[in-house]
Length: 175
Image (cartoon, rainbow, N blue to C red):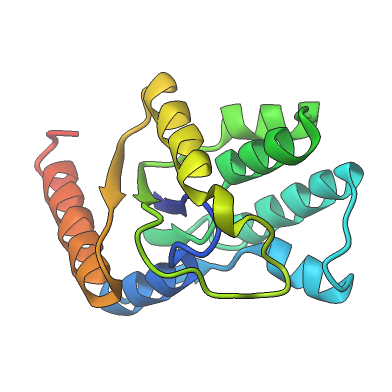
């Protein structure tokens, strides 16, 4: 199984990109569970709820464990950054899940598209700061990642190019 995660701050096109990539590569994508959770709670959540969200996200991934290629519209780095940023701490469950997740390629979405207002989003003024946190986390963990930037169509085409390049190198044994 090849797992490609779309990551980065809020309102950077992660869901749109996951959908477009799954359509282009004719495969599945796993939505962000947090959105469903927060819609059911009118956006209210606690520190403890992050573990519930993380556990459900993992369970949703497991439903696709036999797929050859799958795109994840979030992953445990998002949970770690979210928890640390909002609560200044990260639960053992999320920390362990982050260490255990197996992501073959991260696509880090740069916050260079316009913020889309959404009652579930919290930090329009902090996207650049959050992006740097994600970027530094990916570097420090030696993760394989590519930065995705540009406006919507441009970023979709860049992501397709990066994924294609990765898959070609994977097939050739270069990864």
